[in-house]
Image 1 (cartoon, rainbow, N blue to C red):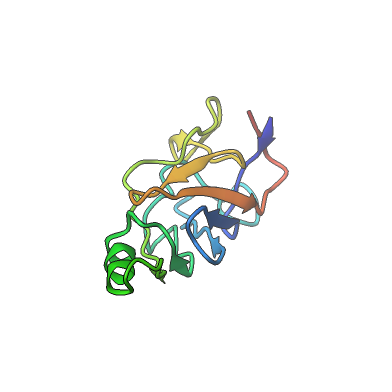
Image 2 (tube, rainbow, N blue to C red; image 1 turned 90 degrees about the horizontal axis):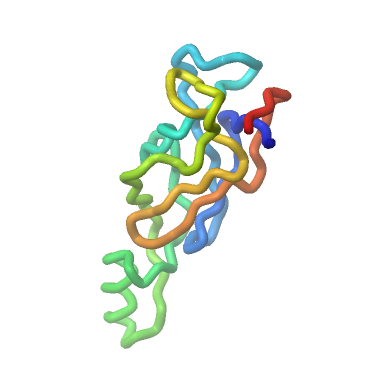
Length: 128
């Protein structure tokens, strides 16, 4: 059992150098004073903002900068590449017709990073 994640939740990527904040557009999802997230709140530059600099060698800009630096890992600006929803969502609580996002959900970046909720900005709404 966990708590529903709301807009303003703090996130971190395993290859990012700074935290980011989850942006949840209201879209009739306000059961509290903050909009509640669902698993489809995964849009880069809309819901998920950059995590400062990226250190993942699978990121083409990091790979190019690292090659130019003769193999010395060279972080580059993070631009999340997100194509799948958060997983897992709540199996029984729907927000906006989609499973609610809970504090244990993770999001996978196409470059290999794992994005997780660090501070969920929760409400008192519990989700399994």
